[in-house]
Image 1 (cartoon, rainbow, N blue to C red):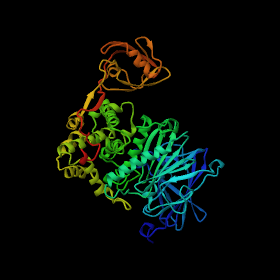
Image 2 (cartoon, rainbow, N blue to C red):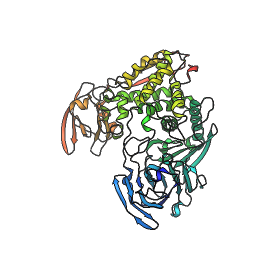
Image 3 (tube, rainbow, N blue to C red):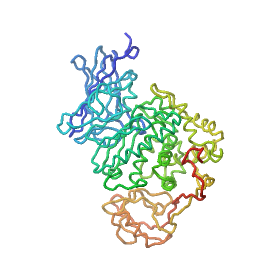
Length: 606
């Protein structure tokens, strides 16, 4: 008998029910019409694309059982996330329970206020039948409080009405897990960007939400990005898009998907009708729009233009690539740039955002030890598993990657007289590797192809930049690169301000050192991260980080002061020689009038 993988398969059917809101439990039923007669294998992903850490989602499966024709079928667990049913013919049904209490964009969450899940957390993969059509029946909870709930997802309806409970469909497993689902009483608005409907879904209490402003700003961002990648057709690579946002007291994060994004933000960051102001967004709202811009740009850069090792993903193990500086770093460069091109912020605000990134990169000595290529490859074990020593050991491929994008952009524009830019490289990547990626999984790009493409498109030899700044650890010469465009970088740090050169956090006893920077005053005196400073020169530290600054303000750089701190439960004394701030405080300004700063518009406008 041929195995099921060798003949046409019937669609796989899932039913997911929010069964116990207070207990945070989803019930999932999976029906396989043509299981492998030698024993069907099932596996749950160990990680979710876009978040590069093994998360062991299978640990949240509380109970699991299988049956065929009403009779129990034995399940053997093969490893931490894989099961195999006993051999047999005929329809096989799995019943399992998933604990959902992770309020993040990566997993699943369920309570009396809403339900949310990513497919990687709840849908077991039927090994060998990944290319088969998948149907999902999303059922309403039985609780009376959920009678008014709706469903938001970018998954295509297959019987369900839009925003309603019922059946949705995906062409294959890869598509199934790329459409997160939100259910609850949410705020909903829709706008069109170059003819494509985009939904804004806001879950959580947000009094006086200014949805009209949010619609207008997101429309501008989306239309700018669509026109960037498809300047002639202005055609988006999707039929519909959903911004799925959970508003909380304090939170920030996003995760990209092929036709949607899952976001979490502080409700204070969303615009309000109670305080409507014209002009540029405030700091919190600007941060949220930057997050939306970042995740939307991923629609092209990483969801369709992918590293070769992601085409396709292996979701059971780590997928190593040295290219995250391109897919996350370049996206971080363009997210703010698109806000300028969309007319949401001006040059002054844009320069402030760039300067903040520069200062962040220069803060830690880890930038001199780890390249962005190494940071990309080690994301699984280092970037996503940061500890108190991370600033001294690693570099962010997001922030330094964004500055590398800026360096490439400035270099190409300067050396081609404005005829070419980084925009042209991105469009070439899109044309060759992204535009035709779906519906079948296309081919990803290798690191060697990336480097060759830069040279080909720009007409330059850029190997030196790759060697020194991508594979090397040198600081980027941004002041020199910006100079031809009339932009001046200035260091405004207060070198006379006495400092411990350590991160300061709250603690009931005093001030906890969250990080101790290598070569700084605290490090050289013997203080360590997690020490709790309780007194400086005999005066009590009260636990407020600003109190440390207030106490140190009475001293000069070079003064020696006694510091008392607890390490675990032991009181220790340290003799600290205070330092000034060793890290530049960068500002950018337009030094020459009448010349447009590089990158704010397409090369033809420079």
